[in-house]
Image (cartoon, rainbow, N blue to C red; front, side, top):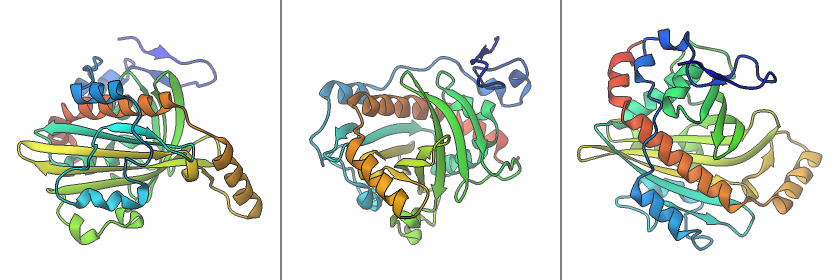
Length: 276
């Protein structure tokens, strides 16, 4: 196919696959069509916003390692501080947790790998450190461009060790059973962090399931710089910026689409490329 190019303000960045992209050995896994969101996601959207506080806050993210499920695994809430909380459950037959651990390290060095994840929404990805020879993500920063709903987001994703959010490393010693991905989310063009994400991938009969959690805005909104003035500006942002409901629903839909889309090709992709 012919790539659909972005505006001249973003030279070299475009949606879709170019002729050069199609020469990549993994291009056969590029599938343009996106399946409809699962019914449990559609039901969560129909239900609308949950009561504030119904979704667990960031400091309780280690509860993901408990047996069973939270009261709500898919839904969103508008929080009193102006932020939003989002949870998404994705069933992934045939996928093993360690495949996602590999994916987060492998995809970020090339935009055409990133586009495998969501061909309708992903435009660009690069590691801030510029390295392409390192298949790792913890301690690194990914710079991405993607559509969340109708808006192009230019994001900085700083991956952190799960221990930073209180997870017990002893419970994460077997990536065949459970993998936890944690990251601080911010803007790539502004020195502002806006939220956090945590994905748990745990083995279940016949494959895995991903339990995704996002905490955006509110008291998670903060300048990356330090000092008295920066702290003052952060407090002003937290007080005056309120996220809208569509930002929560757009994020929920985007997560459901990309995780389901990639999980359908991840086992074959991993088998072919994890050794490279």
